[in-house]
Image 1: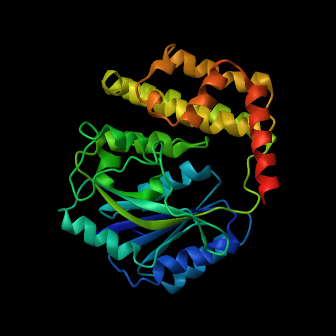
Image 2: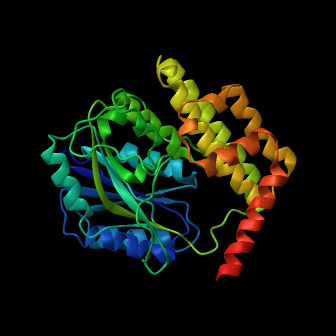
Image 3: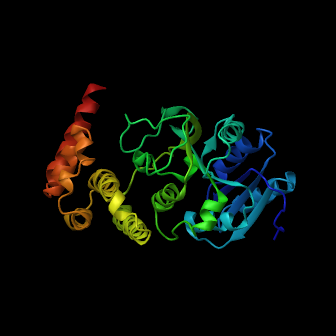
Length: 347
């Protein structure tokens, strides 16, 4: 194990690695080719069964002053990120998923923005969705309210800009001071999907100075065949419910739940019903499965349909929510099938 460095680096770039050998080199080259040296790159080989471990070791040998590798048994993305976080010594933590890439100017832009605003607790930036060839599928990965733009060039915090809770909840679209993680004992949940929702919403509540930079510095890869399968639907529903149970418990333990309850309920409705329940319908999930997220949301707030933030959702989203609330799963499924048929006929 490499001894922890004593110098104060600006960035610790933490990259979890698992079964991505066809993408890993491209991800690393995009980081290392920028010539940015005020950083360390921590590759966490999360028990990958392919050649990822050897690739990681090769880069550590080629860039011994920058790249280090952690080899561990498989713990999932959350466990891999936590391992990298424990090893990190940079002032800020930047997580990159190993099948994604960053823009050619990302590291310099991040450093410039941090310096410009006297090193805030968190810097948030935009991301794009790209295909296997790197072509943009979506120029901006948006949150709950795509039309809502967070102010740029202003020091923000969650109390004054509550809409930050509705931004796309990815750890990869922000760099955050390591001390925010350490001082508040914030880590990623292990063994569940959607772990970013928990950690990002905790980081937002604990960051007193936040800057938003409206430039796409991160590229999410939309892999071929990455549509949800029915065999995954049950786990996705179970994990997203677990995630929001954790979020609500954490906010309550910090005395923050009353202040943010309406926003958190709206966030939960969007992520649990509008995203995951709808995906489960598209994947052919059973009525019993689809009833679980509806019951959970009702337990959070029996009057959630009157939530002021949910009333701000667009008409199509509100229609989905209302049909789900009434258990009209077959009706919603029929609407999706009819819409898909119309799209095919128009081609």
